[in-house]
Amino acid sequence: MRLHRNLCFAVIDGLHKIFNENEYADKVVQQLLKRDKRWGSRDRGFIAETTYEIVRYKRLYAEIANVKEPFDRDNLWRIFAVWATLKGIKLPDWKYFSETPTRKIKGRFDELSKTRKYSESIPDWMDNLGVKELGEKTWSKEIRKQNEQAEVILRVNTLKTNKKDLKLKLQSENIETEFISNYPSALKLVERANVFKTEAFKEGWFEVQDASSQLVADFLDVKPGMKVVDACAGAGGKTLHLASLMENKGQIIAMDIYESKLKKLKVRARRNGVHNVELKVIDSTKPIKKLYGKADRLLIDAPCSGLGVLRRNPDSKWKLQPEFIENIKKVQSEVLEKYSKMVKPGGKMVYATCSVLPSENEKQVDNFLTSEAGKTFKFVKDKKILAHQSGYDGFYMALLEKN
Image (cartoon, rainbow, N blue to C red; front, top):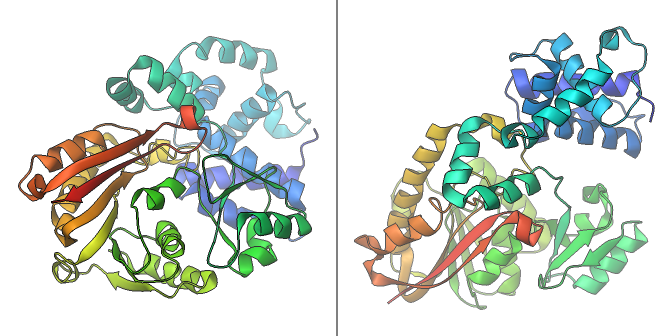
């Protein structure tokens, strides 16, 4: 593999924004890929994958390169040289690489790989927390899996098509997919591709949604004609799935504290041919109170640490702080306590997170069931999904029923 100067510069610029200016990796990569219209898919693939890989292994590579944050551009080139050397790529004779100790790099890598916080490249506090909550063995397997690149999974929009036809349609656009057993609406891309440019996407035949995330709407047990509330809808991946399960019949009220996210949902709903969704911004307690005792089904896709989706957001390893996790747990119990009042007697509710920590999951549900607000609910079942067992994102979901 030959390194091309303009592609390497793009990676260095991206790393500078992510590490030093605290920008989100996915946004930075999107901007970088638009930089030069002449780049082909291989060039863009190199930029995206290299940037993500270095973000993923920042701690390990920085330790080997012997550089400390904040990284200046020379530091970033040193980190890049470590990445290239470990990948077996011959370094060109550019000034940035003039003093790269290639043999030393491999020795340091072998030595540091014996310690999990370096080999899996995670902050000390996160490593300690993972061990405390999941145990040494499970945490080791889970964090290793979370360092792999996530596959691209699509969810077929059954309001417009079916899995077989979607597969054929994508095939005609040179995108190969395969079915995944036990995931009724999922197709997996055989090779990464920009699916958003396809006719099938523009016509609303699918959404990109991880296989684990696709299980949540199913878990809520919705039927056409019901009144369903998605209380933390965000940009609405699960809302749209609920709409297709309900065959566009009944009513879904999609709520969120961020109006900008609901605006995205509006655009997506139009493309998906979904017309049973009403959007509500939670700008006070009023919208919630108005729905007390009205919902047949309630989905609380709660804000969380996101420790189940590090494969997709590797930069959150460096952005997350222990205080954030403590605060988010308080938010989770408040949300459960306030929002659960929207469920009518005999109705059901799902509490879900994309975290693998029991303190955000089972413990929250246990605490809720023993609280004043939770006394009227009974536990039906839950599902814990670990990435190293399923191959997909880490998730948790619990189904509760109101007496």
